[in-house]
Amino acid sequence: MNRLTTITLMEKGNRKTSLTPTRVAFHSPCTILEARSADGALYHAYFYRQQFLAAKKVTRSKRGSYLQQAMTKGIVFLCPHPLASKLIEQHGTLKNRSLTELLSWTRKRFSLLEVSIIFGCLDSLIQEEKLFKVMRDSYYDYRRDGKWGKAYSVLLSLENTFPEHEWVARTKQDASFSSYHRKYETLSPSLAESDPGTLEWMLWQKRSSSDHHPRWFALYGMNPDYSLAAFALITEEHELADHEETFPFFLDQSKKLFDQNEQKNLLLHMTKAPRPYIHKEAFRQCIRVQEWEEAMTTLIEHPYLLEPQDIRSVKEAIPLVKWDHSLPIEQLSMVLIPILKNEKHDLDLLLTACIPVLSKTHGLPYLLNWLKPLEEVQCHLPIHQKVKNLVACAEDPDKQAQAGELYYSLGLKGEAIDSFSYEMELKPDDPAPVKWLFTLYRETGNMDEATAFQQLLQTMR
Image (cartoon, rainbow, N blue to C red; front, side, top):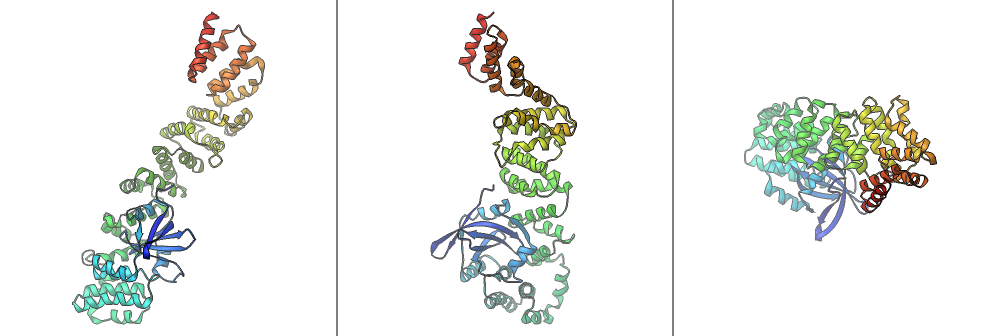
């Protein structure tokens, strides 16, 4: 369904492990991708601002860890999902890092505060004593340089990771930090400039607030480093509430981030919600990328009131769909008839388009039963009467000309040829069936047969 379904993790000694993503949790500061190896082992890969940090095979789950927070309070999507694919496709093979390598790598690329923030997310990967030391070292480095604001920010990160740690609580009460307490408690606007990293994860954790949600998006939503988290936030908003008026914005943002096939996959993920405007757009996107089976599956499972362009699309898709047991055309009449019962002309055209497909595996009695929902909604259509008439005359030797014309009107040209051939045998001097056979063979591209019947017709005049 999605382009990327497996990833390769390069571990120590160039050992490669193939992983299949199962879930992705967008949280802050880090996003976590959960995946399984071929032998069923569970792994978690950590990303900071969409950059891969490290991954670890899961042996036990740590209660109250950042991992647990991300999976319960983050924005979680089951895989395969376009956002998960987009997260990892830019990396190719994920080269894992040891604690020492990760510490060196992050210190070269990020500030001491960011290193502290990053490592605060890794409490499921690193022993508590080592993790505390790494984070506290950043605090002491800032204190020695007289950077009290940065030191306080590290303390907040420590507090978030070790909420009951005595040293953190005692140090935070240092009189030197008194001017910072209210600034962070109220999430002062000045933090956007002085400490955007800390402000980002604080706003994210409080994103359910009507104030903090738009503020996070205004400050970080347009930053490429947060593009996937921003889109996850938009998606979460649509899943939690019915905001049809903001759906065009959602679609515009999806077009900036995903190609057309990825947009289709994203919309199909969202069809679980009982919202017709999402179902409609998912169907239309399937049509745009010519995924006929997924288009019809969406319509069958999530019917909505079709507009003229949708009716044209259904008519176009019906003969192109590979109907099988997983996508039975048998259900289509039950979907189309109730929603189009007042659009008789269009409904008649659509049901007629289904007949050639159904006739490949079903006989006339089935076709008549397939149209029975028309009776239930008291909708009288030419297609229904044609099939009724055909059932009545198809086996009657004296009515093969009538049967042939009905078969032809239903698009069943092979059956029409059989009927007119039988009629010609019964009435060898009648030019009418010969003329029909000339027309049918010409329309089906059998020019040798068409020429033969054309010559026969000329001798009968």
